[in-house]
Length: 113
Length: 112
Image 1: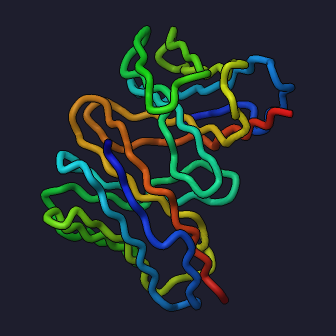
Image 2: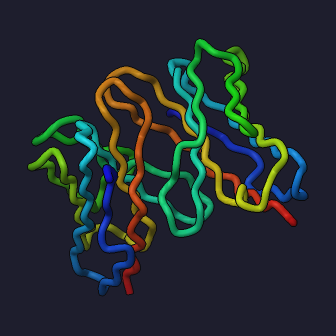
């Protein structure tokens, strides 16, 4: 069935360094790829998303890249800050009918001050 | 403020008891979803509803039931048939034509 693999499961970086989280999806029909940030004890919040007709999208310190051929997409956070520490989830879905997300298993990012 | 409200935040129940988790949204979204989150795992879809009085099973529906009598409300009942109910439950909604899902703050259910 559909699957999204996410790596790494944990990631520690020094404040100011960059962080990269990678996901691979299996369903070639997927055309929407959101990234969610989840802080402890809270629900996930959308931080950035990308559609299959775009290869890269940036929003200040956050960027997402998509390689449709390889079925890979990645989250890039530059100039990391302690408040970036959280669990990040990638997801894949196709925008037709109900949007049934397939989520990755999450990456716990720790930004060390 | 518009949003999704889940209640309660923490819930404790004895084994063998049914329990209902509340999810209310005032975003006027048609679609609503229930996910289960376990440590080290991604979110897994339990049930979803595209419209009032209609809902579909997700990937892990066994032991759960839902209703969608009102657009704003999508309660989830965890029944005694659910073998391992202790988990963090998340409700989400999305508007027509949009893939973006908005999540509630979650309910942590502990069965003892």
